[in-house]
Length: 465
Image 1 (tube, rainbow, N blue to C red):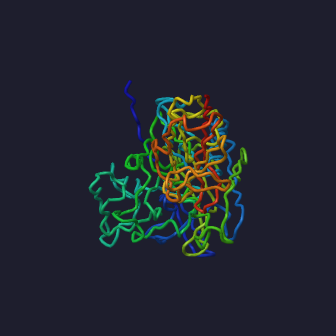
Image 2: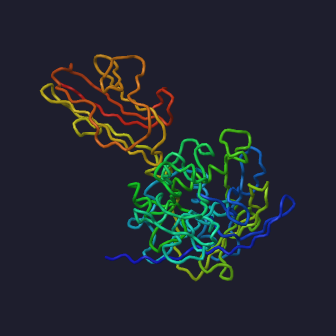
Image 3: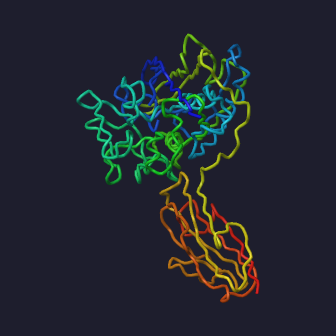
C-alpha cells in the first residue's frame, strides 16, 4: 500500500526585544540547531543560547515543564511530555530515529510526542539546522544549512557535485555558516567524545579537506554517510504517520556545546548539566505546553530571553502551543530506555556463529569481527581481542597475532570505524587442545591504552576431541 506523507512546517512567530544586561530580549524568534536561537545577523553569528536559569556558573540546571491545566488534551499530553523530558535529560544520540512502519502512530495523524520533542528543543535554546521557513525560501531550498545571507544580501544555493542539498560539498558563495559542525569529519550524524570549541566550530576555515560548507543532519544527507532513516529532531518539518522520538547526534552535540558554558570549553567551572523536571498541571513552570488556536496553526514555541553577555543569551520563559485543528496522535506508552542503535556494537563470529558453538578437532576455527560504530564513528578508541583458553590468556596484537600474556595487549588504537567480518584467525582445530575458548572483541570509549572494554561481545567455542 502506498504511504501518503503530509508535510507541515513548524511555524515560529517571533517576538523579540533585546537589551543588554538590564535589557530584556522578549522574542518568539525564528529558530536556528547545530546553531542556536538568536544566532544570526541581528544579534551576532556566534551567539549561544542557554536554557532558563543559567547565569554563567557551573550547576545542575533544573528547568520546570508544565501543562496548562485548562488546556484541551491536557491529560493526553502527560505521557508524551514525560517521555520527551526523559529524552532531553539523557541526551543519548541515536540513528534510525525516523519510524514510518511499525510505530504506534496512526497513518493519517501527526505524532504529538515527536512535534513536542522538537518544540521543547527550541525552548532550551536550539534552533533549526536548515534554513527553514524563516529564511523566506520555498521548497527544497529551505533544506540548505542555516546561514546568513552574506555581503550580497542573498542566499547562494548550490548543492555541489553530489547534488544533495545540505551536504558538505555545497557551494554557498559568501553566505556565512551558522551551524556548529564537528571539525574532524563534518558528519552531523556522529558525535565527539568531548564536545566544545576544541572539537566543534562554526568557522568554515575549520572544515576538513574537500568540504566547502557545514553539513546538516537532514535525512537525505544521512544517506551520504550510510546512515538511513535518521534526521536531527530540530530539522524543520514533520510527516503524518511518522514518529521521531529520539535525538540524533546533531541535537545532542548542540545541547552539549551550550553546556560547556561561557568559555565554550568542557570540563571547566562554568559547565552545567540540564535537568528538566515535570511540574504537572500548572501555568507557572519555566516551559508550559498548551493548545491555543489563536497562537498556533500547527505548533509554535514562543520564548523570551535576555543576554548574559553579547555572545550568550539565556531563555527566561518558554510557551509551546498546538492547534486543535490538527489530527494529533497522543502516545500513551512510556518510551523504552535506553533507545536502540545509539552505541557502538562490536560483534565477534566463530565460524559465522555469534554466541556459542561446539567444534571437533577435525574442524577449522575461523574468527572474524564486525563493528557498527553508531553515532561515535570517528572517535579515537582502543580495540582489544582477548582469548581465554585451556593454555592461558591470549591477546591479539597489532600484527594480528595472538600473544600469551597476563597483561592486556592492544590490537589497535585509532578511529572508530565500521568493520564487516574482518578475519583475525583461521586455523585447524587439530593444533589446539580440547576445552573451552572464550573470545571477546571490545572497543573502549577513549584512546588511552588502558583496557576498559566499554562496548564488547563474546563468543564461546567448545572444542571436543
